[in-house]
Amino acid sequence: MDFLERLEETEAIKRLKYRYMRSIDQKLWDEMRRCFTPDATTSYSGGKYAFEGIEAIMKFMVESMDRSSFLSSHRVHHPEIDFTSPTTATGRWALDDYVIDTQHGLTIHGAAFYEDRYVKVQGAWKIQHTGYERTFEQMQPRADQGWRVTQRGFEE
Image (tube, rainbow, N blue to C red; front, side, top):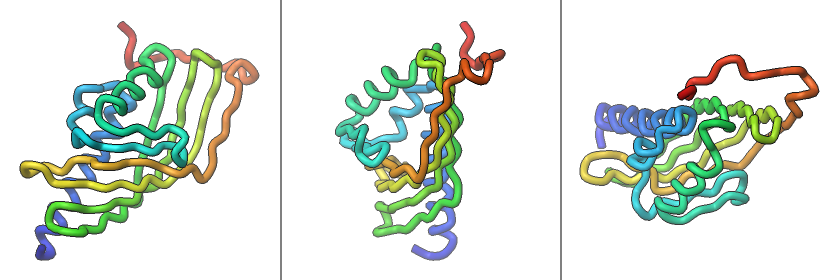
């Protein structure tokens, strides 16, 4: 792979990861599904939430990140992408996330490092594995601060 090809492929993987993160925050489950291979695996929070196969992954996402009670902002940055072949790659990403869980009355803020594996399938990069290990996570009851959600992107 020459330098220009490597740059183009790196950019395609970045866009894939950004699409995955945006899909979480906007609850775009069909779009998220297209980010994964059918046999994808996940290991969130150091393996606390580990899943095998697209159906198990999507079931977890839909059930745990309900539109009405789980408001989130996930930001990834500082990608370290390495190609292991013309059709496989690994990636490491820094994550900063902020979650408002209205069901449990919590604000959750944390940071982590994602470790990913990617595979190119029919000309498009897909996530074969994604997961992260937390560097920290903090939770705070929202009632203690008198906070309330004044706007949601998912009002129906």
